[in-house]
Image (cartoon, rainbow over all chains, first blue to last red; front, side, top):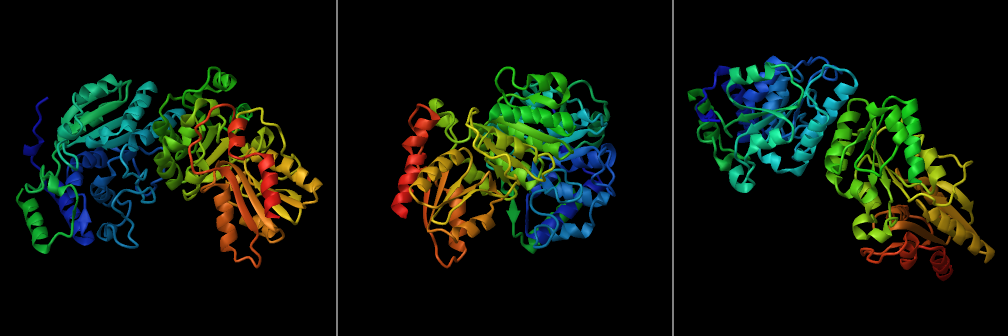
Length: 273
Length: 306
């Protein structure tokens, strides 16, 4: 499937969300910016259009669940949760600070965060538990799990995939933020996942592929009613999407102590994109 | 003890709709009645401990009480991070039922024995660790597990362990049980070593050694109060466990005693598996004897100390 997410334009709101994340980095002095940038449109569509949630009742039993299994992309999650009113926007500016609500990986104590993640390969198993529970309770709640493609190196992801297929968890949807880069290099070199879509199919999933920065295409896929199997949507994304210097640049997997001039360049680049 | 434990889970499941059973790949026919009667809460999920534990956490976070059963080494070693992060960090009500804690599976070799589970799990905040002496104490403890908050690990023996615990003793999670109240020597047991300690104490009493016995079916929370009250009365303390001498019962007792600034610190010895892998085969009793985890050695150590 030929998808070139590098060329997909970003609208005003997508750039503003990224602007907030750069500001979080400015305040905290650190962050996994590139990993968060590849996720923004996936989370945006989920939080804007798909998830049945009520920010005033984060523990509402009937709510849909989203688990960010690639927890290092949490800045994107935090800006969406703040926008939806799970906590005040001011919490974003205390990112990673003493006494702050939000740390460098999501924690379940944060309103709207379903599970603490950060160590990779746990989220999909949480999702299997959530989806199974919804079925046992006859609840309409759906579960969405965002995993990274690099994360799929972990064997536990595939244990969970087998379990999801065994139980035919049609109320479970895996979204792979497939940016094709992990910390040290291209996923194709570090631990090749191909044929990736075929792997998920072979494990018993209905599989779709999409440009993970194309809001319309993402929305169309996610609005489809569930079938009889669990689903995987492979979202082809660009690590660092939105700032040319950061895009597909391994040096940006995790950054700390950015000088003021560099921050100014990042803000400027977001305006120009 | 294993069969009694699983039967108890079945009874709990009949009484409480939150109770769910999850096994990995257990023996044919395990909990057949449970499966037939309550299939929607019976899961046999394959040889995949990492997924099973986090899946259980996911169920527990939504109100279920999953009882997860497989053999103790795989349950505690294979998915330690899942226990630490997904069970303990999230403080969920998952119950881990570990078959064959210690050297029960001696004939099967070191891959199937676990002599570090108490130490490894004791280091995790919020973990509760139970090691009953026999099937009856197990049942009394298991009945307390549905309404207890947070994750629990239950280490149990092979079955057919002789019943030595006393039904009239109240069972409270986190509270040691007093079996004797002498003032020369304090013997401390956990799990199946209660039997050894009772045997040794009888022998020592006949020799005129006034012996106290504290039994810890709860390794964590650890009852420091009972320990310090007893330890202040005696000249010597011996811990006996089917576990490494590092970090388990002996470790917990040593830490407590040394930090208590007792006016008179009793002599102290740990009996357990020394810092080495069990490499021999044979029976559980054979391996325990080879490491001195036996009443004869308890008696010999006591005589040397007093």
